[in-house]
Image (cartoon, rainbow, N blue to C red):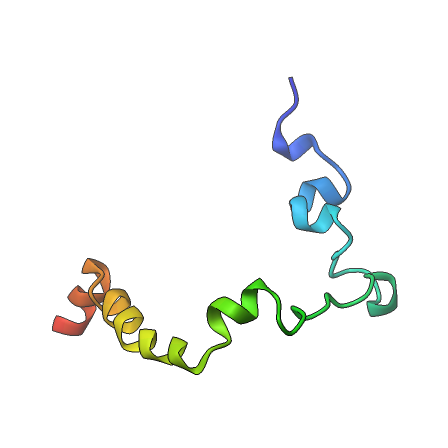
Length: 75
């Protein structure tokens, strides 16, 4: 039976390293940078609108409302 300690190579550093983003490789060997989402795509239609900024206060409130964060704010 093998454990995670027995694994050698990129798999030992996790699934992202196995996909070619090994930090030990020179930048030219890591592959091309990912392309940005194309204008007019689904991501642009959902979050590219200026009205998406109206959601920021609600998102910040939800993050601050987490019990662990609230306990730190109370101290």
